[in-house]
Image (cartoon, rainbow, N blue to C red):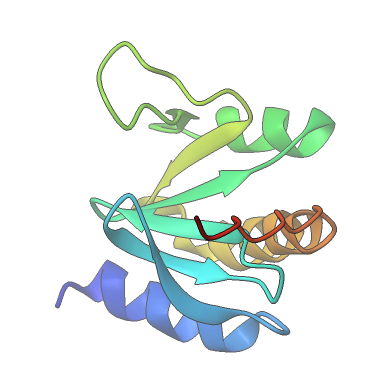
Length: 111
């Protein structure tokens, strides 16, 4: 396990109501509504941010819009390298708080 992965796992414990989970096969913090509050991807923190917070994150060296596949950006999701781990907690908490407000999808009906 990398230092960045250990750091992310510890971060999940610091975010209120967050539980460890998976998104795209990667580690993430799930909120009670099942939505991802943040994700760990190749030693980067992936967070959903808006407005000034997104601008702050994108201003960091090496940070950019998250592309799970080349040429397929996920607008609103920012990839922040481990070199900026001092900012991870604040970004993750903001992202998780926003994710917690999203509406839970209804369960699919069984056929």
